[in-house]
Image 1 (tube, rainbow, N blue to C red):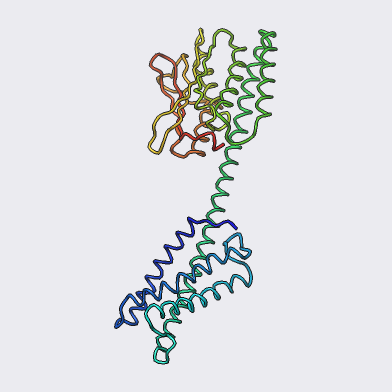
Image 2: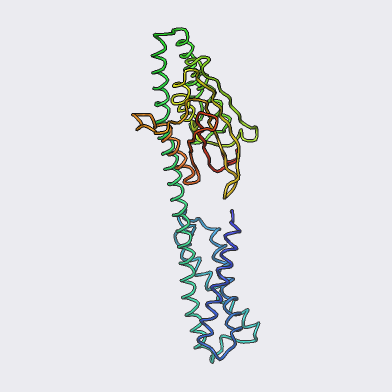
Amino acid sequence: MKIDWIAKLRHFLQIIAFCLAIAAIHYAFRPHKPYEIALVYSLAIGLPSWVLIDFGRHFFPSSQDTGWPEGVAGIALPLVGNVLGFLAGTLFADRWFGFSSWNFEDRPQLRISIGITVLSALGLTYFFYSRGKSAWLQAKVNEVRSQATEAQLKLLETQLEPHMLFNTLANLRALIGTDPVRAQQMLDRIITYLRATLTASRSTEHPLANEFDRLRDYLELMAVRMGPRMAYTLDLPDALRDVPVPPLLLQPLVENAIRHGLEPQVEGGHITVRANTQPGPHGPMLVIEVNDTGAGLPNTLPTPGPGQSFGLAQVRERLATLHGAAGTLNLIAASGGGTSASVVFPLKTGSQL
């Protein structure tokens, strides 16, 4: 039997507030008597009734959607708990004040007290029942939302992988006619890259170290095609190796740097991928930069053709799905020439994988 003590404390405080309200109602019917009497009777009846019902329900099979006992127990428990709570609380308060609520003269007042207790018990029972139902529904909504997010990320990932593969095969086709030896090397790299990717876990997140490993495989693949025209540096601090990130998050940025930065430039260039952190409004943020020394951003961006902005759009969509407005992608012209792409989103620890 596992008890959520935080929830019990919250219920206890709610019962106290409820008893104060009931005492005020009692006092309204008997303004000639001190409020202390109504308060003691209300607490003496309400607290044991709550203890018997709220703790007693853990000894019976409960419905998963409400946390309330099923069948006859679900009806008998609040009935028995309230009757015993009323009797025990009334006897205790009678002894406390030296009264006897069972005297003939006090019968009318006793009937009023019983009526208020019954109505209060029904209201309180329904309150906790509906709270349990609401909590279950909210948990289901969160579960469905999480599954929908995961499905969307999977869809985006399955769209991104063929896009990269088609671009690479197109490059391979062009290379076969001009340099068969390098084409063979490139094909070997493709096989190595696909084997590493397809045998990896198909989760929506993996450690940043794995992301850098897949990025290194891809850059080695591109290095076969471009030769000395391309160089790269991967800078990943040890403290960030286990940070979870979406798979293939960085590859579209590197692919974009090669296609629009290094390839149009005769001498090629250098790509640097660097991870670090920066303070954020709600905690530390992970910052991943992809910098290149290529041709840079044009002054006027042309209307993108088919597939030209696919990778960047996928990165933005995946960040929005996982982090909402907290995940951003920015493209700016680097001060020393070339382009800088930076991805920023809330930092999570490796324990959350």
